[in-house]
Image: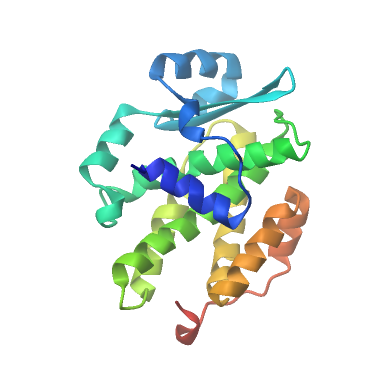
Length: 236
C-alpha cells in the first residue's frame, strides 16, 4: 500500500532521477529532532518546528533525518490532500512536500559529489528548488481535482498566496536566514510564473535543465526571464 510520502517521492524521482533510497526510512521522532537541532547551532532555532530536514555527510555516506510534528501529520490525516486541497491542509502539505524535496535533492547532489555544508549557497539552492517543485506538485493536485475542467486563475492565486506570501512576511531575526527566504521566494514566484506559460512537455524539459544548474546559474536564469503572466490559452 502506497503512502502520500512515497507517492510524492516517486513523483519527484520520475521527474529527475531515482535516488535508490526509501526516504520514509529517514523519518525521525521529536526527541531526535531536538538533539539534531541542538547540534545544528543557533540558526536552527529560528526555523519551523513543524517540519525539518537534517543533512550530514559522514564516512562517505549521507545521513538524512526528516521530522514532521504530530500536529502536521494530524492535519494531513484529518484533511487528506488526496481527497482535495483546502485552507485546512494546504499549509501542512507545503511543509510535507518541501522536506521530501530537500532530502531528495540533497541525495541526488551527494551522488554527484555534492556534500551538504553550512554554506549559504547550498541552503539557498535547496530552498529555491523546493519552492519551485512544491508549487508544481500543488498545481498537479489542483489539476487532478478540477478534471475534466481546467485550473482557474483563482486556483493559481490561492496556491501562490499560500506558497509565497507566508515566506515574504515571515520575520526572521537572523539576517542570513531572512535574506535567504526573501530572495528564494521572489525567484520562485517569477520562475513558476514562467513555467505556467509553457506546455506540459516543455515544462518538464525546462525544470530538468534548471535542476542541474548551480544556484548562481539558477538565479541568473530566472532574472533573465521576461516579466509576464501566462495567458488563458496557455493554462493546463
